[in-house]
Image 1 (cartoon, rainbow, N blue to C red):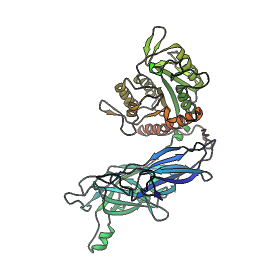
Image 2 (cartoon, rainbow, N blue to C red; image 1 turned 135 degrees about the vertical axis):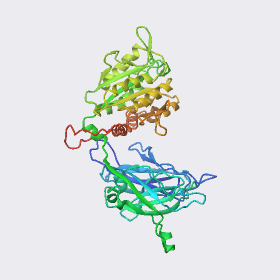
Image 3 (cartoon, one colour; image 1 turned 120 degrees about the horizontal axis):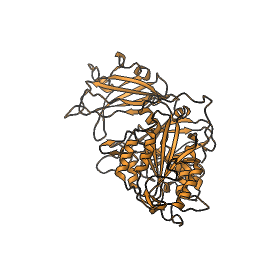
Length: 523
């Protein structure tokens, strides 16, 4: 498929309204060839972005992106796109790479249905006496793993790190889903290429060997010492033996549990809300205020807490939600508080259901004086204290903070996040209004893990989104809320699983071993 900046593809279109049919998972692997070079002093560093087209609105929304590969015009991307496929529907996909409207090269897609295998393999390898490829030093070797396809081709599934200046490298152990390695077929061929890394991207081929999941699963043994062979050298040199050997040092397999496994086993999501009552929101009696109490429609604060809460409450059996405010002066003495219960009950901040939270929020707006500053640390620490008391996997805490401005206590907030990252807890921050939220991105550790006083967060537990990115142009509040909820909650399952895994917690037996529950998704 020629790429003119964007490539279009279609695998069916799925309308999620009230769907109860389990989707088939399709893994899409992307490669490019002969891309347009847009850099002056080196080759380009391409990345492919996948967009999916929404139902009804036909708007394109980013689904994910590959890794960036430096100095190459013909990249083979390791990071995959995994989508739900429905035979009876049409899904339009757009892949962006290069300059829109300009012929930029070729983009190649490989799609395969994923098996239901949920095992995870962890392995470590080393090599001995690899060929020397660098003129002034030894080689800088790395491994590239490929799984074979039914048509005899190979799909890249993993790259190791580069070990510099050695012919006897020991690579770090790595973890890979078994379905990525062999898609559940234990005898499927796995090809491994050995390369010498070069800065300009023209990596030198050292050699290759083949194996299978079944062979690797034998662990360290005489069967898992592989000769690295270079077919060209073997054809030219009669006395050629090999280009070194690669040895499997360790191999183990663990089951990969899902979010649903823990929910079925009784894990409860405890949802806590924290609302910004600082003066920068404006007078709630004025239409310009973000807290404006409009009798005819929800303000942005109410929309955000309702959108997220109505989904999370289905995972909380008692439907009781602690709800707090911060940054206001409280009656009767006007004392500033950075964590106060919306229901004015200091002994029990729980509200009954999301409607109870909304009622307490509106009532609180009539009683308190909006003030400041915008401090996050007190409410994070409040929830972290509760999470620290229940670390056996039976409960997981989700804190939703809705705010309009810049954090005043960033240093204390970073420290609170680092502490909370070791607990069964996630933090969602929704920014409302027109303010710049650059500082919030620092807490959302997708790129760089949050740190404080030399300590790094054990997990990425913060998800930040500006609400304005989800506002429907036609003014449809229901659609705006659905879009917001989808994105802010998307990381919760993985964050819960990361805590359970780091704490070596397995799901308990299902409380009700009934057939798979049907899940209705409303958009």
